[in-house]
Length: 288
Ligand code: CDT
Image (tube, rainbow, N blue to C red; front, side, top):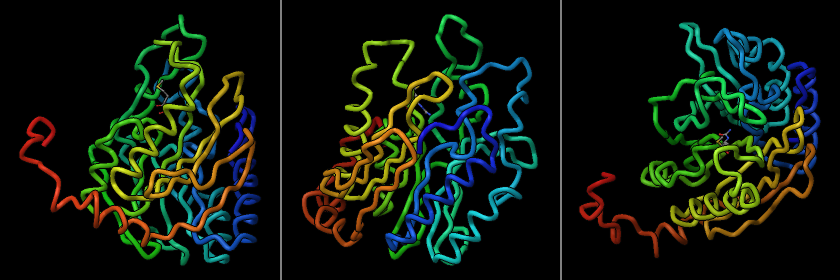
């Protein structure tokens, strides 16, 4: 996806998601993967005195009144949906979440972001804030995998993709396809020397995660310049070999498609990365 401006409503965003869904149907897709926080601008870039100052960006139910049409249309097409959104639970918890539904419209699972980057307090020295640690709680639910789409699938969100444990936790459960939405500003205030490496680091970690676990990785950006902040695009579909088989070439709304044969995973999971045969967990004491 391209940027979502502060003035764009939830319904405006859904209209754009529907246009991509129509294209996905034309391409006979089984599953469409939308990015992190796909229904709003990336609001943690602004500080509010009140913690609830951004609550209008959160979803109280999923599907909700404005998003129901997306799930209904996807069900008519028989296409599964992965959608990132800000979740406000009935008991007042705020999570950076993603929902997955299958092609029949049944909920497969909800994933809540484990690794929450950025900072808790206003830091005016930054050109823009990254207050995810103020507006989202860390999930303690880990990285489950679910049976869906003829295989084992899992989810992660943005900063999660930089951590090898994310992929390994799912890899140890046999995951075959991992969906990851992201919003990654090109400017990293604590160390701007990393700015020119954003694209490299993005693909580096997702390609490594795919290869080392013999799984497909679908990395989906909300990129382009959003409210003056330039963010990385370059969504990619990565094979279990670690190769990128499809990549976005614009910074706007763009559909990329690949035929993700889950049987390809076995070529890695049953040979070089036969975990049961070759892993040495007793040598990895610090992380096990
Ligand atoms: N959304 C998200 O997690 N973004 C972070 C930005 C870097 S931390 C300020 C990321 O890891 O891409």
